[in-house]
Amino acid sequence: MDGEAVGVQTTLWLVDGPGDPELDAVAQTVLGADRDGSRFAGAIRRSMDMLLDGQHTGRFRWDQLYKTEKAHLGTLIEINLQREFGFADGASMDYSIAGSDVDCKYSQTLGGWMIPPEALNHLLLVVWASDEQSRWTAGLVRALPERLNSGGNRDAKKTLSAMGRGAVRWLYRDAPLQENMLLRLSDADIEAIFSHKSGQRRVDELFLRAHGRRVSRTVVATVAMQEDYMKRVRYNGGSRSRLQPRGIVILGHYSSHGRIARALGLPVPGPGESVSARLAAARPHHAGAPRVELDGRDWVLASPGDPEEAVPRLPEI
Image 1: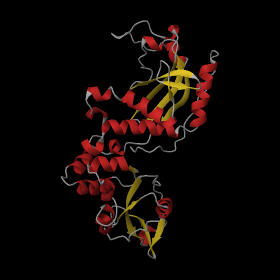
Image 2: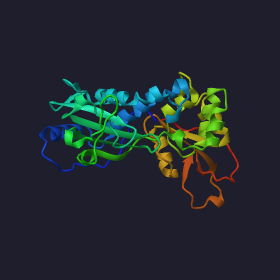
Image 3: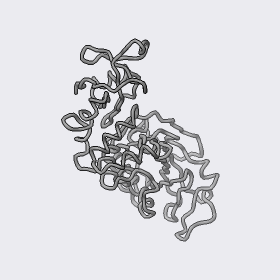
Image 4: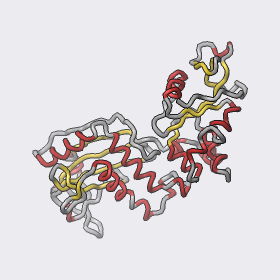
């Protein structure tokens, strides 16, 4: 749930169809700038996070938004894609890409893009994304009359017909979106986290309950609801030092932390991410468990039966 683009492995689809040199050129331009889809995914993630505005509202779910806000997501995606890729303004559509006018359309439902009369015969960049599923899809299609359903809404907007949906050239299909980790926690965990009045206490509770999960800076901001939210994670008064006596480490985007994560079989934090875990000093019953040396002593991931014990301070290099 961060504003930073993350590396993702996407499935690239270049489906042969009726000859359309302009569509071919736009597809090659987009894929040439973003072969793995990480920049595209980052722009979508930023758009969702901007709309939720968790740092100031504490919101992290789609159903917490007002209807008017939900309708604004498509505009944010359009803006953030243009910022990310530097697309020029189109003559009559949103963008000019490889010399062609391209209109950007987002829908909460895959295939449900609403196409206005002025976009007829133009190229469309169609986008779908789901925060719940942590997936997204994008493709190109020309809005030919025979590819549109006959009905329309009050604004005369139409949707793609089955033929139209079949004509979409998928650039990225069912690709991973950086996870909104708060959506993966139980209702009991969410209630416990947000029950605290103190932003610091909420962040502490987050790292107590989200062991082994990547926590983005946007999630921290949503939980802390403070301007200096990342201070709530660090040593010198933040969760790293407050939870240290309980054996909990919070790994960040440091080389040494990445080595610790790999040694223990934990997710490796990316830029702006944190991963918490409770450790226990290695004892005979931990034989065979992955371990890491800290301050001259071996530590393993704690099991429920292991007592809480203070863990050494981690290097920040």
